[in-house]
Length: 297
Image (cartoon, rainbow, N blue to C red):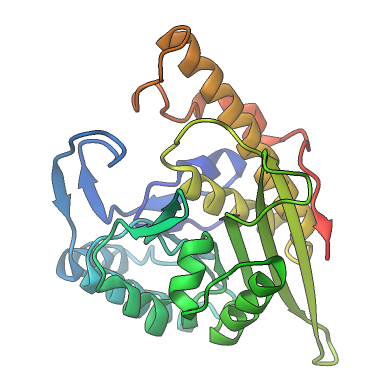
């Protein structure tokens, strides 16, 4: 299987049979969930130089592109140029975009990347993406529409479909789950085209039990797992999301269990203790036990 170039290292999918060419968008000492970090932010010239190296060796042949955390608008715009070139070479290439911009905390949304990335995502990136995985706040930013209910979320996903992507998954939301306040709700929508040209839309809802901790990297994990499982189940968003979310459940449960064991009784785990236990969860990533069922809407 051809590789997956990505500005964020997604070695998680390697255990599922993908060869990965990882391209950093930032070179940080650690993720930004820590109190301090040091490092560099790559720009378009540096990305172009790396991509030119791939082209000179004729190894820029890909089936998938996955992008995530980015801090420079010129870098992000260059990603679009590269994706378009790759799609000319391989019209079946699938571009999976996690539009990492911000999140909601206690009902208030905030961006944690520069504001000038938003118009690049809205006007250039999303139109060339095949799959996008925004959280609720990011979906609202991209469409300019607030979400207060499941019905409004479905309308927002339709707006995102109209911008380009055939698959939209709102990975987390503040919406009240039918199962109660202890559950986090995610919603997905996938449009497929039948041989006669008609379009069929599958919509799903997932409820995941909340974990009382703040993790960094869950969005990256979600996007990587969704890429892998939509490859294996290209026309069944329900199954792909069930495997994605179930794998995440196992990783997060193992992570919080290990973190609490290290921090001690009654002590809040540190960012270092809450680093996702990816290596220890290899079997759960390869073949997750389905513990989260999706509801078809």
